[in-house]
Length: 146
Image (cartoon, rainbow, N blue to C red; front, side):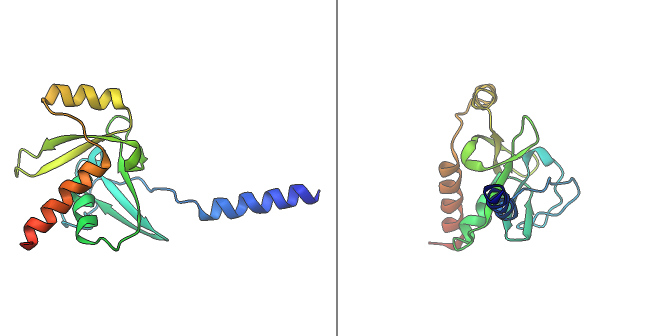
């Protein structure tokens, strides 16, 4: 009986400390750029304790993180294929460009085969989260004149 109680206590503590993403809804406003989130399959979010910030896209969240390197929030991006929020380290990102404003961005895929197929159809190569963040840091430094 004592083992059962100890096991239940451990599971309870683990459950209270786990972070679960909250699905991004269309019409919410991006924390960084303040634009309305229209395509939720491109959206991202960060979670810091009980605070959740929604972002229009992988590009927006990566630029925010590049501008705020002290931010230690947990990041989630939306898997384009399933619509589920997943850690960006588990994804491949397909570079894309917004036709309306010419802004570079990324489409996240948890399924590498789907990322490769999408990248091939666009004539680009998929990249990992480190490459997305490196590009965001370059953007941030270029914008600040460094």
